[in-house]
Image 1 (cartoon, rainbow, N blue to C red):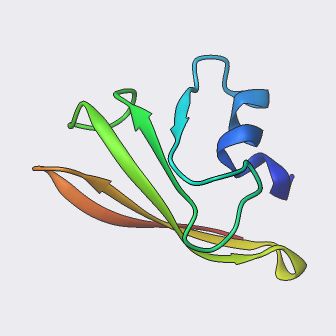
Image 2 (image 1 turned 45 degrees about the vertical axis):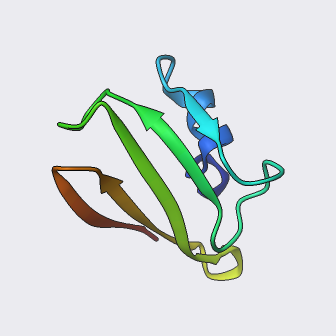
Amino acid sequence: MFPLFSPVGEKKWVPWWDYLNISKGTCLHEDYIFLTGQHDHAANQAVWIVKKNQPESLFVQFYKVEPGHKVGIVSEK
């Protein structure tokens, strides 16, 4: 289940999910950055930054920034 909480993994279970990779590569790591279009946020685009990635303990944490609207933290364990 844990690999599904990444930009690439999300596409496997959310058909409409799409993202733009800003960081190099597709492996999730701390400071990895990607963008998503409008699907569940007020802004036209959201910036996602991986704050913590601890696959050994099945924990990932993202900063989600919706410019002009809000900043949030998304944690999955």
